[in-house]
Structure formats: C-alpha cells, structure tokens
Image (cartoon, rainbow, N blue to C red; front, side, top):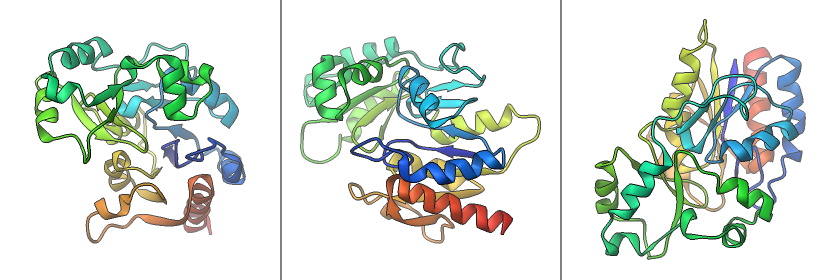
Length: 255
C-alpha cells in the first residue's frame, strides 16, 4: 500500500497547521512500512521542512500535481514540471482587464500580504510564494470565476482548480494524474489509499483503491461526489479525521 494525502485541512489542521491528532496513525503506517506521499498545493520549498516534521521521505507531489518529486530527497532532486510559472505569468498578462482585475494572485502580493491571507509566518509565506508550476489566487467578486477565465487560460494549456483557501491556475496534470504517474514508476503497482478534503481532491479520491473524504467545515465537498461512490466519509475534520480514516483502512485491510 501507498498512502497519498492532501495536507491543508486533511493531514494538517486548516487553521493551526498542526498534525498532532494524526500522529498515532502516522506511527501505525510507519510500523507497517506503508509510505505516505504528500499531494498538495504547497511548493517544494514548503514541503521540505514539512516532510521532515512529519517524518516522511520519498516521493511527493506539489502544486496540485504540477510538480512531482520521485526520489528520496525532494528538495534536492530535479522535479518533473510540465508547465512553468513563466507560462502562467504570460497567460495572466494576456487576460482582459475584466478577468484579471478581480484576481489577487500570489504574484500580486508581497510576503506580508501572503502571510496575512494564509495565516503563515513570514518565512513560511516566502516558501509558499516560491511557485514553480502554479499560481494561487483569490477571486474578489461574488461567486466563482467565470467560464471565460478557464477558456482564456486553456489557450496556454492551463486550468483553474479550487482548493481549500484559494483558486489555483495549474497545468492540466491534476492530483489524480500525478498519482498515476508516481504509481506507474513503480515496478509493481501498489494499492493506493488516498485522503483529501477539497474540490481539487475529488478526482484523486475517486481514482483510489481506498479513498477518504475528510470532513471540511468550509466547503461542502461531499456535494461534488457522484451517486454511488465508495469513499469513506470522516466524521471529524482535519488530522483527527485523517486518523479516523487511516484506522478504518488499516482495520479493513489487516483486521
């Protein structure tokens, strides 16, 4: 088995970024030598210290699937990046004013502003700003961004997805496709256990051998699931829900 997991709002608390409630489940996975692969909107720069804190090593997927690190040292390894941030900047510069002006992108903000909207420390906000293949943004009008924004970005081979806090401009390789790439690189395909809480996690949850939707008090992600799905729906949110789901998966697999 391999566990693929979203971070913010899933393994990490949405507000405090703590993972303390999930530590017993992380230990149980480690005891069975089941690897845990982060699949997140975070950057490589953010992942390196986080993985050390979580006691994780090996593969990792950053920026909503836009960056894949296959080797054991994600911070030092040349990543797999299909679309660069330069392409995203060019696409943003080409947008008409009525689409660009309501967007507050990371590249429009200084580190202090990013810290304010994310709740991160200035150092962590600087790491969050080190994007390589995606661009988070806030939409400063009511409702979601219009279809015309997605259409304009599609000309550059880009998509719009929604995370827990931000919308994201990303390459067409989403989290599910990135997981498939990581699995395909293994000699024997392992069983995939996948956990997430946001709309941008739905595709990877539905593609999993075992998927768990972690409760989200901020977004009704469950409303986006198809009828007849087989996902585990946690009662608790954040790392407590992550622990709950992993315990359920371990019991189902090993008794």
